[in-house]
Length: 394
Image (cartoon, rainbow, N blue to C red; front, side):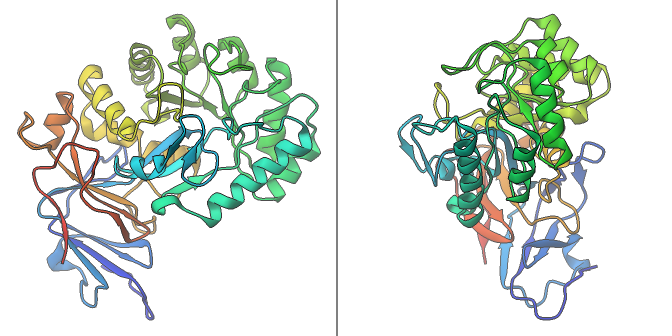
């Protein structure tokens, strides 16, 4: 039943959906051919004939293709607006939207030329970054930013000040001057006390000023997310990766810009210890290897095809797992969640009887539309291979 209320200003009806990917490991596929959102929130899921589809502001005919929650990139390094000085590239966020990413999470605004490292300056940068991405969404993409990099000398009051100002994230622990596990652990505890979630750099150094962060430091620091457990770019030895998966309950983040073999090892270990809900995906871009607009889709296809994980489960790593771990109101097709979706289909002429089988063979799908907060934000992707069928606004 629809929960539509009086005074609705924006009612979106998506009909003729072939199959719904839920984003939830416990129920990755949902039976239904219609999803309705009211003012940006999902209000009905089910069969078109059973739902209240009258008075729609916008109706989308999915033309029999798949609907997924919008993909979430758990690890990016934005700077300002839709520009990255790391690769001198504009519209990189818009390009990622065309890869199905509707939400991004900053692991630190570290590529800002002249990034301040004094405590007053780093707090100012974090607060400003949180504000400008809260006030401006590039192409509609939700960028959760303002992630200060820890520096020596920070005290508990600094974390309270950041939290009071709206900062909810720490940048990668280990990218600043704080590299000792004991010091990092104290600051992570202060951050957690004030509702700030933390990520730690894992593996060899990635940029000048960073250093090796091995399993002992990661375990002692006890950050909420084991950032790029498969290295960014250089991974830890296999035994250390397995130890990290087995010795704590924190997020196991696998990134595109890391070691693919190490990423597969981390994912397999998570399944072996029955903790697949900990696996989340990021790109770790922009970086030395560039910006990867299709990075999250490529991770899904890689883990599904080489890791022998059903594609519908791999989609959960990039949607519901991340949403739950990051406490987001998106990433799951469920009543009350944000109406952020990707409509996608098997790529033209790709092998497999349907999209999931094609992905399980390592192929990328084609994206026909993205929707954020119930608003169409892009149509046929300029970056994916062309989809076999396309949705349309009717």
